[in-house]
Length: 159
Image (cartoon, rainbow, N blue to C red; front, side):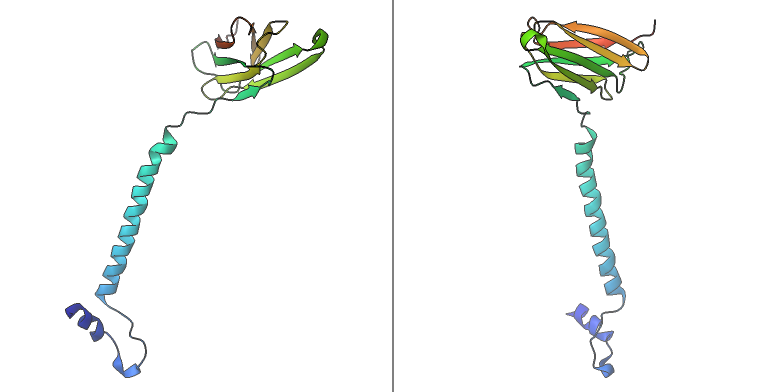
């Protein structure tokens, strides 16, 4: 009751208009509301920070759509550091007299990883993957009929 009377004491009764609350109580109330909003914002940011920080980069995928097999690549340099955006390409020939072909190419992510999916499980010829970064290149041969889920660690080095 006493706080209510202190608010009335700051009103001007002669003007017969709306009584605006003035004085220390309103500034204190505003400071409390602002500090509570600030604490809520900080709490929300602290809760959301681990969600975005722990996500590893997505592995780029090229899908041939010709079968169930896949090939995973990790490309590194001589110092065993991953190479970003090393291009890995393959030409898949299939069909009658190998007249049809599908050309796939994918670049590696910041961890040096890339993946090919949808490779045929019984190609007539082994698949020849060409890995290139700058002026350095290397070739890897894979036969999906013997190794359907192949994993390759490729080191590119200048000779």
